[in-house]
Amino acid sequence: MERTYSTSTIRKRSVAALESASNRKATSNERGISNIPRKGSPMAMTARPVRSSNKEDNATANEAKSSSDAMASKSPKRQHYGFQPSANWMIRSPLLWAVAVVLPLFYWVYSKQGHGTSLADATKTSDIPTGDRDTTTTTILEEYRTLIELSIPPGALTPGEHRKGRYGKVHATFCAIDWDLQSANPSTVPMFKDLKGRSSSCKATKTVVTDFYKLARAARDYDAEQSDRNETDEAPYPSGVVFHETRCGSTLVANLLAGSSPTMGTSRVYSESPPPIAALQACARNGGNACDPDLHSSLIRDVFYVMGRRRPASPKAEQHRVFYKIQSIGSMSIDKFTAAFPTVPWIFVYRDTVEILQSHLQQGRTNPTNSQGQQKSTVIPKVCTRNYNLGLNRQPATTLEAMKDAGVAIDKPPSASLDPIEYCAAHLAGLSLAALHEHDRWQSNHKQAASGGGRFVEYSQLPDRLWNEILPDHFGLGRPLPEQAISNMETIAGVYSKGRGKKANQEWASDSEAKQETASKQVTEAAKRFASGAYERMKALSS
Image (cartoon, rainbow, N blue to C red; front, side):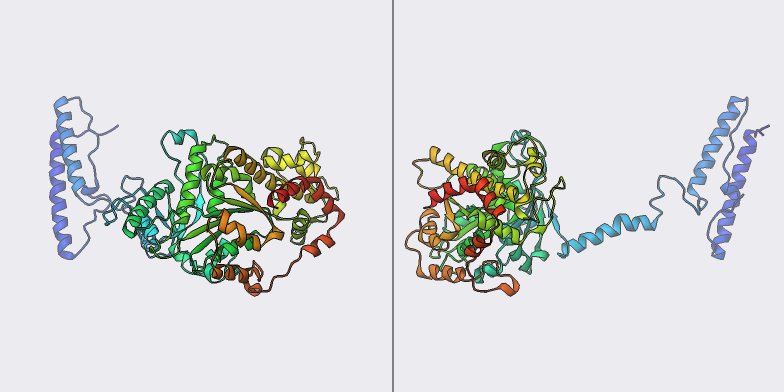
């Protein structure tokens, strides 16, 4: 049976408890003892529920209980030595404070010192003198840092984004590239990855921008200001673009373009840099979403614009030029490039298919069976068979066209109907067909055009055709080319084009005859069956 207290009893006990607590506090303070209530003390007690039939007594008792609770809330609470699920338990945990506050603060300081990759949103603003550009964006623009990577999320080019008047948020990575390495000897940094790897400041200056669309527009505004200030009119769009098959001399072409100016550093070449191919293939990798062609062209133009930016040359200086060599698979997207840049000239570099197959086989890997366990080939070429095991719905359209032209039924994956060498030949033919189709389309639609379009350059025509025709006429450098420029290119052509490490400055020697003489019947038959038609057509166009 629960005990019931009268109102007078509760009042007396409350007053007594307060007096007792006051006396103990004074005594404890005098002795230097912590003011912690002990178990069973009046301060640790709370009023028990009052049960009475008298309404007045109940009201008075509840008033006393509230008064007692208020007193207790102002007094020190009992200490807990275990986890108590209260609302403010996190405040009393030093470890959680360290995780929630100290560690993020440390990371912020660490990033500001340049040890980590900075993340900057180009939409942010600040009070710096450059107007509405944030500090990181301004640094990228003023220092003309180089775009080195591009991340395009699926759906960024959908028609829904078009209704917003822009493509979605594309992440772009920049850093400082030492372009003097290319100017000094392009054969020692034949690919952009080599140039980036040897640029000592790239890692420390690497910066990611989370809205490339807005940065590209900020770049145009900034460059317009600089152009007015320096009285120059240099558009950073491509001077020329190189598409190509594989193992066909395209790296030599890129090196020659880098040395095509008598003034060191005037010509710049992006040799298989990641951002252009990412932009060209953006629709193909749009995650199955619909792709708006206008947004796609806008993205491509922005990428090439930002990559072509350079410090303005003085009015008397030689005009800057920027060239691009796209990865071989980019030839499948040549129509996307011309849609964005209908007047920019391009070339397609090709070679005898037998010689290309021989080069691939020398760098291939041993694999005596195909996916069905049948022994068809002892070597699988690496680069040209990357799509070999993909289904029909993931094969490039022109590769399937080459297979169909060769009499292959398009009803099962290539790995089930072709051996790797045959597929490699079909892949090479597919690259060539993509360039031929774009050439034919251009010829039919732009018969009166003064510039633009493509030309086909065979490996055997290098290097002379580049400085005799392509550079002065097709790429618009004008005639005659300076003697110093031709001398530079002759020197570059005399060494191995991929002169990394110990191969630097090694004298080049032709290997075409040896490749033809050592080719197997399997190689020659595959080249004839799948690629001879496209090859003969290109020879006719480049003669």
